[in-house]
Image (cartoon, rainbow, N blue to C red):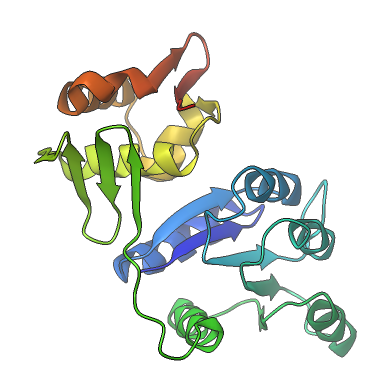
Length: 227
């Protein structure tokens, strides 16, 4: 299981990659432009195992974003581009990009390349380290999708878990309702805000004393807040 940051200004491309990545058991965080990706990596330099980065994006292109991200985050990068010129590939590799895929691409091949990169960068003989985060008595085992509260397993629904996982991976960041619905339910979700509020209420109940970590931002959304 890998923690993947997908950076692309095309919502459908992000959704396609998310679908295949999560099907294989990976966790996906989305950014819709280079600036957002740089900020995520600056705040959480150890949060991602690999970054899938589009080249042509508004505000900050993929090459410039990679150059900035490299200042704080060492995660390998796989570049996506509609252009296949040799100059672009060479420029990307000079920046430390690990692989380069030209659009349109096969999602299956993309995930195979992700696996190949991760196998290459993983030190030989390194034992698998469980991906677990703990905050006081709250513990989230991302590999097993298990949440424990004071050592006792919490019975979360799949969507409650997905919601908690996304908020934890973006802890201390203000998450709008739109961001939460898009990244947890998907861009083609046709429900309304009440669905999100209901799941937040159920999640808080499941977390017991640690529901305090989920802070309501009036008129905005929510934040998973820890010191």
